[in-house]
Amino acid sequence: MSLAPSAFGPVTSGTTASRPHLIVAALLLASFVVGFDTRVFTVGLPDLRGAYSLGVDEASWLSTIANAPQILISSAVAWLATVFGVRRVMIPSTLIYACISFSIPLVHDGSALFALHAVRALLLGFFIPATIMVIFRNLDMKYWLVGIAIYALRLPLSQNLGFVLVGVYGDYLGWQWMYWQDVIVAPLIALLLIIAAPKEEINVSLLATADWGGMLLLGSSMTMLYVALDQGNRLNWFQSGIVTSLFIGGAILAIGFFINENLVKSPWAHASVILSRNIGIGYAIIVAFTFSSSGGSIVIPSFLQNVVGLRPISIAELYVVGAVIPVFAFITLAVHLQRRVDSRVGILLGLVAMAIGALLGSRLTIEWSPWNFLPVVLLFTAGQSFTFFSTVVYLLANTDPKRSTAASAYIQVIRLGSAELAVSILNTWLRQREQFHSNILGGPIAASSRDLHGTISKLETLFGTSARGGLEALSAIATEVRTQAYVLAYADGFVLSFWFAIAGLLLVAFMGAMPFGPLHPDFQRGARKTVEEKAA
Image 1 (tube, helix red, strand yellow):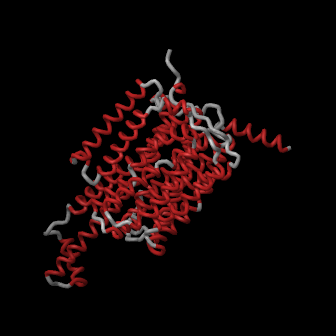
Image 2 (cartoon, one colour):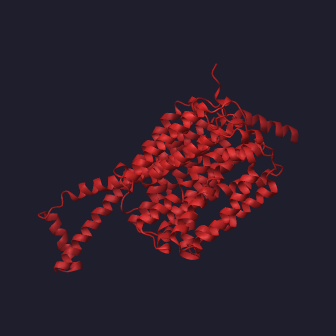
């Protein structure tokens, strides 16, 4: 007789919080810290390079080290919260995180800088998985949708508000505030948890049967694959021995993990958790969504910074108007929609919005300014809000909440892994398309070309007729060709984003209906009706 998927993995149950509003506030801040810090570090890396006098290679490895350790620990955090309780896991983590964030701007030694970033990333990996566990362990069912909405809200909000924060820090307060913002926020999270999080006993039985090998195998394998993806584009993928070794090592450890989960007596995250049709397709949609979303989050700022030459502060107003303010309305609409219809409708609406935004973006030209992107940013923000929220609700609705420990492990791996995979592939795509368009545009330009000589003659009025003036004219033409090649490559990035949104829409057609449960719209309507009857 085969065991049902819910028969694998530890059972989790917790104490309902007596002050749910404070717990929700702590969830909000914890979710945003992860998104803000990841985005702010990426956008602000050029400023950090200048502050620490880092070369291109050093800065690239600093970026990898500042992010990769998240995935090493994040898949195991749900289990730790199940065994030790959210208070014991989160409160020390947030306080240590604040201390390290305060220290980093004061450090000037290279080795210490890299080490502190690695520890900081490891601690950051605690925040999001703990958020999911708090929702199911410590919140009443009527707050579950609100908690999931906060979890989903951080993605579009942090991606867009990150530019605003970097702009303010870089041009007004100082780059140090990229780290010091957490000296304020992290202790506040700890304070809210001290006040509101219930005190829970250590689950001794789960601790005694801990699958330490499984946790170590999954975390280590995903970390190796993450580093390989992060460095792949820069080191030219399998032309690099480092990248190749990391891919092979990560794949071997991943296989070892799945073998381990089938052999141990008490598996921590058995693969059966993700083998049902609905859950498998839901994870596939998250991957398609992540790829499509990356088109908006990478292409737009890259174009405005690399082609137009704008600083983050000059882009901030676009994101405030087109994303930061509207995202609260979009996520509220997504919650109201979820209370009335199946999650598939929200997923469908979000992917359609992203597909339309990508089509608009594919018309990109050299004349575009930040405000030309406003409709694109609005559509991508709406798409991110509806798709990610509805997909997470759908996944959790198809999972037994008591088995959320195992499900959370895979959610973190797929969330972080697909995001890094999307960034790596999109950057490689943009690089190769820029080279392609440069060759196409530069092919007709030959020494005997009449058009070339005509253009040089016109430029000689600006640079002069000397040999140096001729070289400067040629350099100006080459720069113009390369700029146009970048514009065409960024337009192709939107085309790629469009096709991933279409792939997500095709996957929706194969999704089954949500099973009845606390997240189902019929259950939500019944709960509201009961509350109204009691109030009457």
